[in-house]
Image (cartoon, rainbow, N blue to C red; front, side, top):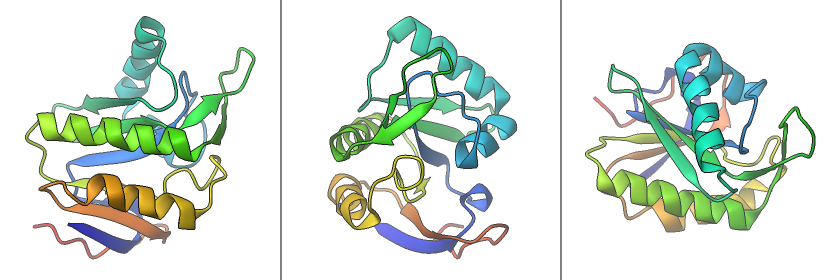
Length: 163
């Protein structure tokens, strides 16, 4: 079941937090930066994974901490040319493929819940009205609560349907 909420995803009690990135993303602003600061090992291992696998947009990489918290890095964006590896715009095709990859990863494991933001609508530059149906189509069939932060309210805990 999908639950739209308003609040700050960083306060989510969901086991898996998802966010959009580009391959080799420096994670230097927004939610990416917050997750980078909270989980510096995740950021380091993401870059190691990128160097080993040379991923393309549309893939997903799941990282789990020892405390049972996981971060799903959804490759929704292209990497801009140059050495800085900054994230460019997302495409709806990349978003759809990344959500499909996330769905497969979650079905393989025993995950209890998922939270994600308004994916690909910030730096990704996509319209929420185009992204929302992709999320619904791909994730509605999961047997876990899917909490979508449709309105960002910094510092405010959302009313999630989780214990």
